[in-house]
Image (cartoon, rainbow, N blue to C red):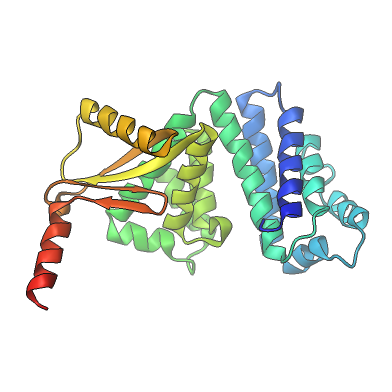
Length: 273
């Protein structure tokens, strides 16, 4: 969604969806998100359809009619109207349309979690699941292996999360497994964590520490970072004894590394010069 007109069309689609679902309960919003992501799967699976839906040689209304001929009766009116808005845009490549459809589905799932007062839970669950996977080499290799059927990987993730996570979390993990936004699994999961935080008007700070910080230490760090960046901060903490001591904090592209491990690495490098 690099072009301004594409961003404007995406904003119009999200506005339409939010207006149409203003009174919807969390379950209905979850279902709408599922519908939109099922369309994303179709668009991902059918490159000829994807190209047809972004073909500027076709009038916008013709692209909308093509979409409606495929989806009428298969998805609800709310999803169909928002998706119709998306295909009216001039996308520079077909992959951008896929990204937009996926993002719209994510927005609906996050809205369902927000309406259920579970958005913070979803953010934390996505992050924690990523940490669990990263800590198990065999599990990480299996879930990240694109040569393994996506359905099998989703089934495995669903078994691991069953009864332990919000419905939106499970579905978002499945989306990360198939490459959300063209990203690898862990990168897609991290992006979804950030989108969940952004919906709460919050920026994620990733913290790595040798020991778990106390509640008071977390509050102090949040206060300092909030003052530094001028916005609300959400901490996601990874306890890793390998850093030995101190903490590492990453906010967007900014990295603050005060760990003992980093200082030792620098000292070794200086001694070998």
